[in-house]
Each structure stands twice: as structure tokens, then as C-alpha cells.
Image (tube, rainbow, N blue to C red; front, side):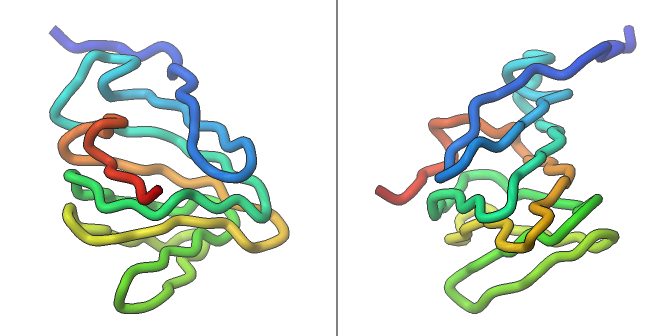
Amino acid sequence: MANHIVRPSIVRAAGNKPKIIEEFIGRVNSKTDDVSVARMKSPSGWVEPRQTPEFDEYTVVLRGTLRVATHTGVVDVRAGEAIIAPRGEWVQYSTPGPEGAEYIAVCVPAFSPGSVHRDE
């Protein structure tokens, strides 16, 4: 049977400023362990702690610019663009631009606080 998701759950975000995470599919909203799908809305100047997750993260930017830093460099991902961060790679997300960013993040397997491995 198909599972109609009527509304997302709001999930608490890490970072220096409040960010809205609307999880449509994942461990919280649909009790799905295989994948999570969430819409993120982060303000200008938001920075997330560095992390080395146990999941692949596929991100599509809808509005603004998402900055993605890894050990090999920094990429600004703009509206209409996407980026893939493979599991096990050190990564840090931020939104330094004046309008922040809105983006969709898909994590395989689903995001969990225990599998993100944030730096202290």
C-alpha cells in the first residue's frame, strides 16, 4: 500500500543559527530507515558542524547558495544545481550568501543523529 505523506515533521537542526528541517520521508516522519528526504531552509550566515556521515547525501538547491566544504576544496552550489557527498567523506555545509538557501536533501540510508558523526 502506498504511504501518503500529508505533512513533514520538523526536525531540530545543528548549527550556529536556527535552520528549518522539514522531513517528509525518514526515520522521524515515516519511520523509513532506507532513505530520508527533507526540505532545508537555512538563513544567511548559517554554518553546520563538520561531519563524516555514514550515508550518501544528494542535495538539490532550490533557492540561494549552499556552500559545501570538504578536505579537497569548497564548492558553492547555486539554485538549480546539485551535489553528491559520499558516505565517509568529511563535509561541512553552510549558507554564507545574503539570502541563505532552500534545498532538498536525500540521504541513503536515512539520516540519523548517530550516523552523522559531527566533529566536536
